[in-house]
Length: 262
Image (tube, rainbow, N blue to C red; front, side):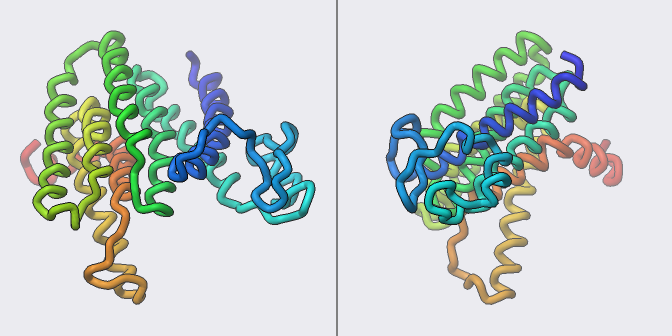
């Protein structure tokens, strides 16, 4: 599909999925059904009307308040919708000519939900992370059927590296330094980034740890955390993965050239 036609479609898809992700983020950690009952105002209990459920637009028109009781609607909702749309468009700009795009869209949508859940509840639900690996694998197979299988060996080895490293960290610290949800998420990220090459995989992996370290140091300097404070690591894994997806190969190639290893 022509990029000029694809990008608007991805933007709309991102808005719609972003609205659904808001439901996932609220209900999944609480063990609630994501389909029933329909969304309602938490203050007055009135069901959200269809015209008030248009991503971003409805929140703006309602000025961020419930139509029935005027209770404030958190700005997080339109931010998630808009952010998912922006992410999808950026992925489309980068990979519109690559069959791996559907895998990255799924990973991006799941990543938005997982990051927000981990930040709020300090866990990565298996109901998302386990199916994510299967879906990612299927989409990688489809990408291979279209673009060829030259990247398969690196993708599989990358999966083992990510999964093995996080499993080692988890069991080596008896779960104190890493959650098991991180261990389950890692193979999906390793598989997807490995399909792009070792540069994307390793840069993504290292960027996750580096971003976590930077945030930890900043929080300690600001008095918001101590040396033993536990931070949810899922968001940093996903940030690192995004860095790997968008610039990992370029950063790795530049590093090899500068170091004389290229």
